Every structure is written in C-alpha cells, then in structure tokens.
Amino acid sequence: WISVGDISAGISTAVLFPTPPKKEEKANYPGVTMQLRLLSWFFITLNFMEYIGTQHASRVRRQRGMHPNVSQGCPGGCATCSDYNGCLSCKPRLFFVLERSGMKQTGACLPSCPSGYFGTRYPEINKCTKCKADCDTCFTKNFCTKCKSGFYLHNGKCLENCPEGLEPNNHTMECTSIVHCEASEWSPWSSCTKKGKTCGFKRGNETRVREIVQHPSAQGNPCPATSENRKCIVQRKRCQKEGKGTM
Image (cartoon, rainbow, N blue to C red):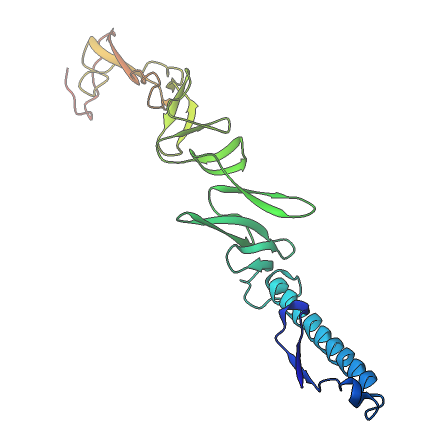
C-alpha cells in the first residue's frame, strides 16, 4: 500500500492505496489500475470540497463583526462594528462620534452629540464634529454658542478680551455693550418749607427729585444725584392756632 496526501490548501488528509501490481501480476488483476484512478479522484474531490467549506467558514467569521445583519458584540445603536474600533456605522437618525480613551479612539452612536461637538446630517452618515478648543458648545465649526471658562462669547467667537466699546459680562460670559446710567426728568420744585413747616418763616428750602430709569453696567457712567435742594424766600404768614407751629 502507498500513501497519497492532499496537496491542495495544505490539508493533511492522507489516503492509502494498494500498490499497483507488477508486470507479471497485471494479468491476474484485470481492472485494478482503473479502480485506483477512480479512487484517487474520489478522495481528491472530497478533500477539495472540505477546503472550500473551510475557506467559506473563515470568511464568515471575519465579516461577522461588520455585517449589517449581525448585532452580536455590537454596542447599542451600532449598525456595524469591530472589536477594536467599536462602532463603524450607526442605525438611522443616530450620530456617529469618535470617543478618545488615552491614545485609542473608538466609535460610538448617540441620539445627540455630546458637549463640545456639533452634529451634521449627511445622506450616508450623521456625524458629530468637535468644536474648537476654546468652545464649549457650537452650532458649526466656526460659530460657538458657549465658551469655556476664561473666554467671552462675541459674534460666535470666543475671546479672552472684549473688543473696544464692549465689556465682559461675568454672569453670561459674553461681550456686551457698555450701558450708561439714565435718569428721568426733574420733578417740579416742592413747596418752600422749613423744618417741615410751611408757615411761620420767611426763608426756607424747596426740593426736586428724579428717578433712575437705566442702571449702568460695570464700565458704564455712574448715575447722577436723584434729588436737589435750594433756598427759597416766601412771604411770612401766620400759622393757624390748631397747627403745631407758632409765629
């Protein structure tokens, strides 16, 4: 008997065949050579089919993490994924974002973009893009809506110092217009009085007032006085007896 190994695809299957008869034995074994050939082709065909099946199974295992219909091992929201890179694509309406952990970046699928990112919808993917370094939230890459600590928002930009004519608002963290104080018109002068009385004197004082209608900002002009007094002269008149005053 002789051993014949399968040389296709490196499969180690071996088949043992009876040794062909010697010349003097051929006459005694009619048809043996044909049987050996048929047997050899049978085992070669069988081994080739096994090789094809092995290759197909290997290809399926490689594609399992990336096939849209395979969800095993993928985080929630992922349409396709890999063990190393996380999500590769997302289910409809979810946003794809790259999350950094040390030196590694992995994909994730979220219903909305996290702080520091803005979302853009494309036909093929909904993607989260990182805002600029000084921006906490943004509408686009070049239009910030909230700045990080130490920066003030002005026209979609984050600035360390506000432009001339504007001042930093530490409550809203924005550059706002400088507001100056505004006061109303003066009221008419009051009656001339002296120590709270309107009789029994010739020289007294009269007063007028105004109200503040707009308080100033931090760098605005301060408010003026809201009351004024001046001396007045009146004709002396006698106080009534029931009054508290006397002549």
